[in-house]
Structures are given as C-alpha cells and as structure tokens.
Length: 200
Image 1 (cartoon, rainbow, N blue to C red):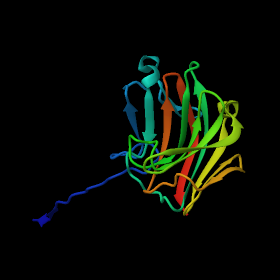
Image 2: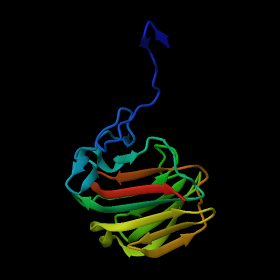
Image 3: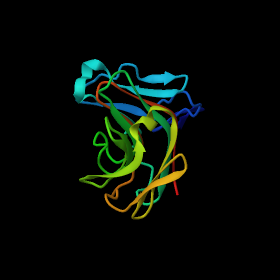
C-alpha cells in the first residue's frame, strides 16, 4: 500500500544467498529421543554432524531441509562426499534423500554405514526399508568417497566412486524428497564435505 509517498509491503519468504546465513533457514537439525548433538558444526573439511555420549544409544540427529521437499521421487539425484568418523565404537549413520521428518527411514534412498558388515544402500517406500548390500566394507567409509544415489521412475541406483553398486526396484519412494544426513548412536560423527541434489 502507498500513502503520501510512503510505501508499505509484506514479504512472506526472505533468504540470503551469500552461502553463509539465511533469514528463514534451509538446513535444520532434528533430534530424536535425545537433544544432544554437541560437536556439530562447520570444520575445515565441511560440516560435522556428531552425537554426544550423554545421548546414549537412543541418540539420533538428522540434518535436513526441514520438510522442504523439492526433489522428485521419479527423477532426481544426490551426490555426497562424506565419511563416518567416530569418538568411540558405538557408531552408525548415513546420507541421502528422504520424505517427511523426523521419519527419515521412510520414502527415500540412503547410504547407511552400520556398526559391522558392509555399507548398505537402502530404498524406502511409505512403510518399509529395503537393504541392498553394496559389497563395500564399512572400513571404506572411514575416509572420504563420492556417493551418488539416483532415483528413477521405478528403480534406484547407488554408485560409489563412479562404480555402480546397486540397481534395485524394491521399496520405491512414493513422495517428493529432501536431502538429509543422519548420525545414529552416541559416538557417531558424520563428516560432509560436499552435497549436491538436483531433479533430472
């Protein structure tokens, strides 16, 4: 509206695109079962999402777009340069794309680095997670590697360092998705150096 040379207006959404801060916020942290993620934040090698010993085995911390689901469940890609570090032996975590928060284990595709065995590629529909073994030892995830997850119309693909490891049709997501990173259990420390997502 304008009166006597003055103008008044309303802005519903305002964001800074300087790569540093935002008035609204894009990424946000959700804690499940415990509110401890001490040690999370920027480092020289990117972002660290870290649990805290006081959180115990119930500790789950998720870094996501806070339900801003901009990526298609029938044509999208996410690429992460990441690793799982640890402050102890009770560690697990991963990265990918998911549907609604905080239920990151539904509707999406993700890498999971468990406590033992191999790195897992998961596809998730609205009710169930489906594990597809990558055949890559979890020790690989202790250093940085490139993980590409691709969601197509009816299938999901996982590549590690440019090598296709999985191409599956089970557990296809049924809704649009958002990027996410999660740290599960108190000793986990997920390091994200690079994360990119786009629709195809």
